[in-house]
Image (tube, rainbow, N blue to C red; front, side, top):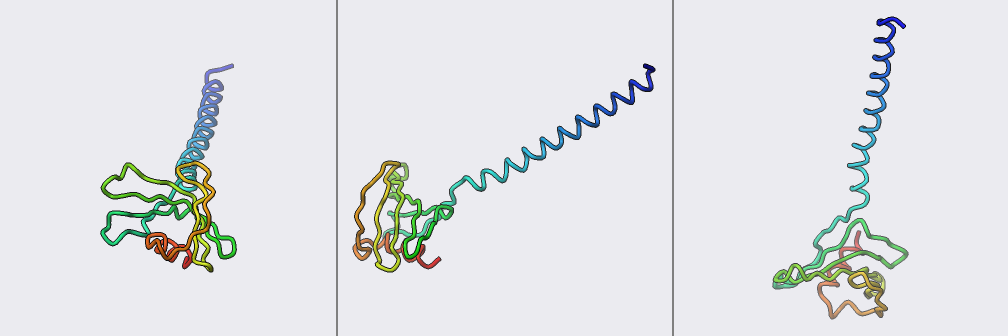
Length: 132
């Protein structure tokens, strides 16, 4: 095989590899940005106490509605102790103005339906999620 033919074959291999490397890199690049966007939480503060010390956040990506019931992931905390967050999976019954926690800090919780009137922070969360 002469040198010209060898160079042509080598150039073809280099172009072919470069093409497939760019395809793989492109897929990884797209996956790098698309996957985290779909898999991350989007926390938004939707309620706070009158003294602004107690706050509650909801994960906008977790909102799921079935009829009058909205289920979501949430957490609340005291601003003076931000490391002491309480995470929950909570349901809000929009028609009956009630809520219940199904999970607290990753553990199943058999919460009964509670009225919203005695809890102004949960009332604000309910107003937000039931109106969206």
